[in-house]
Amino acid sequence: LSVVVGPIRAFSLLPSPHNSFGKQRCRRPAPRFDNTHHRPVSSASSTSSSSSRSMSSSLSLELSEWRDLNPESLVAAPCLIEQTLCQASTDEQQQQPRLAKDVPYARAILDAWKEDEEQATAWEAEWCHCRYSCDSNSNGDDTTPLYGHLIRRSRRSSHDNSAATTTPKGILFFHTAAGPHDLFLLWKAVALVHQLSNDDNNNDVVVLLADVLSDDVGWAWEEDDRTRYDGERQRLREQPALMSARIRAATQTLHRVLETERTAVSSLSSSPLQLAALGWCLGGQAILQLSQLRDPRVKALVTFHGVFDPANLDLPDDNDDKKKRDLDEQQQQQ
Image (cartoon, rainbow, N blue to C red; front, side, top):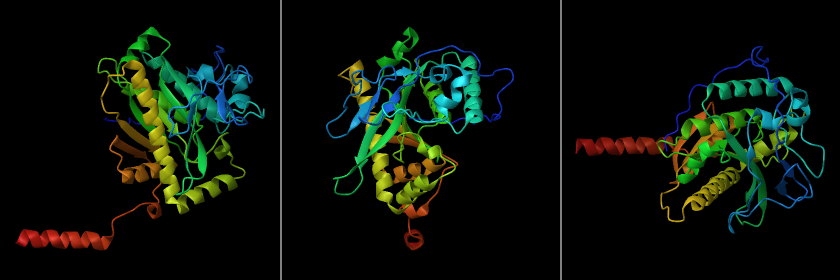
């Protein structure tokens, strides 16, 4: 699986005067996390039956319903940006994660996203929330819930029905210090899906925005008090095995989702599942640790201005390199 990451187009933090997010086309609001019952539910009704489903007996994984993913589906009108995207819901029964730092940040991304949509031939995507888990210790008697998002091309339109006829490929997308609930990453995940999916080449891509912080409501956005983030970050730094466990959980989650999608197409398909991984900032450390797991399913790794923490990596010793060079020189002389 070849992953080509193009240049990241810079954009102003001020709304574009010619493309402001002001078209009030209302669609269904995004699904909300129900942290009381530990399952995603639709925001339409807190009493509706769960749409989540277990994907594997060995992996705890629950998915919400697939819903449209575009600027209008995320927020119905500009006046709702702050309460919809810049804060978590205070409703104990229907908590929604925070997706943006502030209104200027959210508005700038929504405007840039809409501009990309207008320039593209087809940008129909959908997403679902996923809750999965990993072992928190070597004994496997403690698990940590993780909260991510799956993004794929829309299956609602006739144009994209052909995408369901192939074995999809997967991309693990590891987040920045802002956590997994980031409007910017959702936008870029949709871009990846459409840039790398191609009906002519029988390519279809599913992206998992993976969580390494166990952030359920977007607390990683908090700027006034970074105590919780700093504590979790230090924990991952001091326990490299914990970070690796969360990376493996994300890999297995995406693998199970791809298996399910492939089975839905044809139970006779035997094509090997292929994964790639991209990490932004803090997510770059996850990419480096993933490289050392040597997972044969992962065919490409990309880190973009990624964190480099050598204490968490099994780096070769300088003396080992010197011994290898000396041995090579001896073999050449012989």
